[in-house]
Length: 396
Image (cartoon, one colour):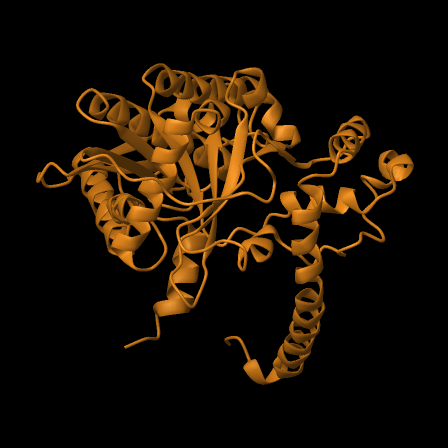
């Protein structure tokens, strides 16, 4: 038995109607929110409202040193520039497989633009199978969240090492896919392990800062509302900000507007928005260590279709006009190379890192051969064997 589409047709129809209704509401609100951005750029009360909201526990985006409605064109790139990107993938541990292990694979690439040299690609696969890697100090098998966090640290480690080395010869930007922050606060990650991961991650950011290498995280199709929340504050009377800042009911924009919609009609191709600091609970660690995560929005599309990406950078990049300009211009150039509004270097890093289904199957066969060679009969669990028989046994 498979998914019977006839039984969910009515639900799909209702989903379409709901989506159309929300789209209509959103389109009516967008110009209102967009106008607020310009109005609040010179509002002397905005900073006071932000301070009061923060005291009340509010989270959102706060202005950095630029007017919040500012727009900036990309600067010219230097004759020589190196773009380094890294990405990772993993095979999670499976108790029902032939053996207990997990794999982390990191792919990275260095594009030496203006040198005439071919890209330098590299992969670093790691098989983790010993007791310490699988169970740590406890009895529970390592969680998928912990494996993902370890993969993120491995990505940052390889990215930082390669970018710092490349920076000795030419200006260098380091790119990663997704948020710049390591998110290791999940309940399945022990506190001691979380602290070790975060310390290692921050140490790599420290090294990049010392080497004066701009690093940025590229987020495609972002759904965040940090700037929208900032503009919502502007609609609150000053004496009501503290009580209304965290009230999710009766929000002026009802959660309908995401940040990217604000900037779609404001940013010309290649332009970036003002820089904002992320005022979020998870950013405390980075703020304390001198790497507070900042963001800006960037139009990486081409007429007539704007494509707004979110770009994250640590505060020392955001505050340095040269590094910020280099990151901005390099990302625009990389997106033009692909023609799909996504950086070419990150596309290549993903290709290097991804573990394909057939590669996983070949790896499992390697495991089976090695187990036999050492006198161990390889076999999946009864559950895995039964599922395989049910799914594939009758196929020809």
